[in-house]
Length: 139
Picture 1 (cartoon, rainbow, N blue to C red):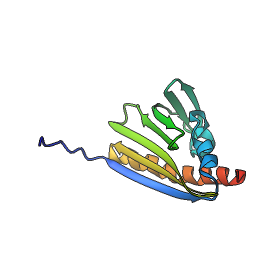
Picture 2: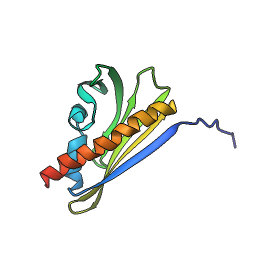
Picture 3: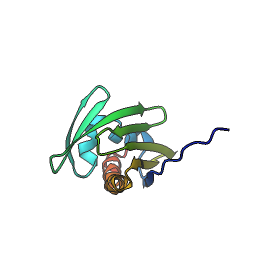
Picture 4: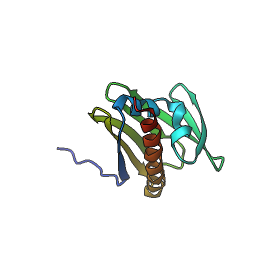
């Protein structure tokens, strides 16, 4: 067995139980261009192919590569590609628990650790907004 090099990265996960169908919750997050409506501090974005560039309230533009948008398992994954990050992976999973009952899980893995903490802090607010938008639909 060949030993693997272990890289220490910060990996954080937040989750939110939402009183809406998984399809309704998924509809909130599945479109890459919708992020300004539910992620605090992101005021706009552009999407071209698999590249999304978000613009923060401070005017910073951050490029991202969309890794997957899988409606079958309701997973959206992306990587921040800005040189600020050595590594980044963000994943949003929407899991059906029951009728009008879903779990939305937002995971962030990044290096350097401090930037993971920064993004993960925003994911808490994002989950609150995703919940508000999905529960307003009730479909």
